[in-house]
Each structure stands twice: as C-alpha cells, then as structure tokens.
Amino acid sequence: MIQYGPIEHSNVGGEGLHFVYCIHVHGYRQGRGNFRGRGMGTALLAAAEEDARQRGAGGMAAWGVWLPFWMKASWFKKHGYRKADRQGIAVLLWKPFAGGAKPPRWLPPTGKRPAPIPGKVNITAFSSGWCLAQNLVYERARRAAAEFGDKVAFREIDTSTRDAVAEWGIADAVLVDGKNLQKGPPPSFEKIRKLIARRVARLQ
Image (cartoon, rainbow, N blue to C red; front, side):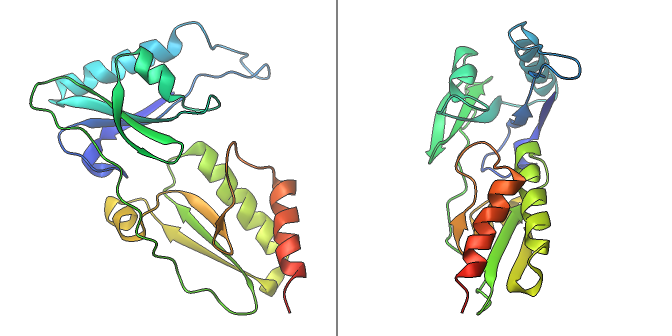
C-alpha cells in the first residue's frame, strides 16, 4: 500500500512535488502473511515516482523516522532520497527529478493550543485522518476518554488541510493535559486508559 499525491494538498510545505504520506507492506503472520523483504516496497515507490513524473512533478518527497521502527528514513535514503528537513524524530526527505526543483520543508510549530477547561482532564486530538497508526491512537484515546464521562474534555481538531496544520503547527497527535500521548509505536488501549485514569485521580 502506498499513499501519495501533490504536495500542495499535504501537511508539509513545498511546491511542484509529489508527497508520500505512507508506504506499507504487510508484515504480520496473520492474514496474508509476511510479505516484507521481497521488493514490494521498492516496486510501489518506483511506480509512484513514475506516476509523479508523468504528471509533471519536479520530484518526490517523503517522510520517515530515524529510529528503526516505522517508515524508516534510512529506507528512503537507500532509494536515492536525501534529507531536506527534520522535526524531532521525523525526517523529511526528497528526490528531485528536475534541476529547478526546490526541497520541501516541515511547517513550523506554532505552539497554539486550545485553552484548557478547568477541573477536567483535557485531551486534544489533532487528526488529519490519513495516517493509519495515528488513527489508531485517536480512536483508542476517544474510546478510553468516554469511560470517564464528564471528568474528561475530549476535543478533536481537524488538520486535514495544510491551512489547519499551518495554524496549529501540528498534523497528528493526541495530547493529554498538553503532553503528547505517543512517543513511538501506537500505545495500546489499556495503556492509554491507565494514563487517563492517573490524570483523573489527580483532579481536585
């Protein structure tokens, strides 16, 4: 599976490029089985690049993490991509097709957050909707928050447009009292629920 499209419709800055939102090859024993390591990812990326070229793109951009657990930046580097920008563990990479292509950039953080509601655990979910992993975190957090009733204020901010990402300075995250819930792979429902329960127990 590969998701890509014109960078102007994505959550990163750039012009005249196409952007890879996500690339994924089934790697689990369940279902169809583990298909990684057979060149499928390489074939998907090559097909996307060729499609982007035919549509007049000046290059292809992608993001990855420098830690070796998901969307590895090193994998894209093996396919001719080079670093354009970085925010935390997230690396923005690109491969120019034409000499006049300009590198992409992360939209800068703004620090803007909704005002907290006093007397409640405040959960803010920034959701673009495209990321499968982030959608898991969002769904689990919303379901866990519902178990605590009015002790938790759960607010969703739609970041499916570039303007929204530019305004808030963040594309996908779930914040619990201002702190990011996720620092690696998607946390389980049980872990999220325990975290919220600890915050609820501290309410006066």
